[in-house]
Image (cartoon, rainbow, N blue to C red; front, top):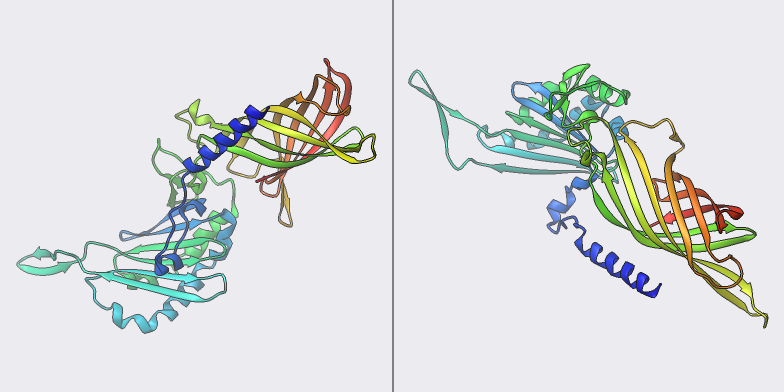
Length: 374
């Protein structure tokens, strides 16, 4: 068992070094307007016509509630930038304007202008006209929740014309229905059936795909065994494989994730010895488990939400066997069989019912394990 523990610790250390870390932002200006890419869960594109378009990005679909009256946000932005119009009057510079409302409600504006390295002209019947080839960008960001609207415009001054353009209705359409119909054409962008001007990279606007990975498993547990409440911890590895490895051409809002795991779980019993002193007894289990999850991009029927609480029921099969025994609490050749798992608090907490038995289902004892994952 000592060799198994050393192997687990070694692998977790190696994996923690191999895990990609987010790039740290050290420049103060960049840090102020930094929007973590990994935090973006949804991205939508709205065609505004004349070559202009809007990219909406959010950490969750519910965050769009803060942009359902985007017309008012645009009016506030236009009012806040009135004093800056003179400095943005050059029609040939490419302008990038960032407008952030931080967690305290304070507004911050960053402006950058660049001139093209070369000058481009349009020749029309012997007349020359200067051409601007790069679009301006206006980005409106909220720090809490994380949501960003980026307008790509031929001229940033065109933004005012989109106040009564119907953006409110488009955002509400995206927000109101979780089961909207998306038209797909191969592996390219998909379009909203009710409004073809709205498109996304995949149905639902999801950005993050389900990837295959190996992850360390570290958790603290408490369970009952007969008349005892038994604390324990888990240390191991789990392999996650999405169904894309089996269906590489699949392109839908539902995926199946498969998880295979191996964990070392020492259980601790406390009792007084013959001398009347409190003593700790360790009984180690090695547990393997398999789980699969219909990772539907809409709320599954087994989910109950309300007042911020989310409960999710997942099919899980776990099997553990006693590899180290101390005291007389458990019989030799004891096994634990777990069936199903209830997850809550963003999957950090889970409840797993199971049974303990020995020697082919002798002395069956029901149990319930509460786990906290780190």
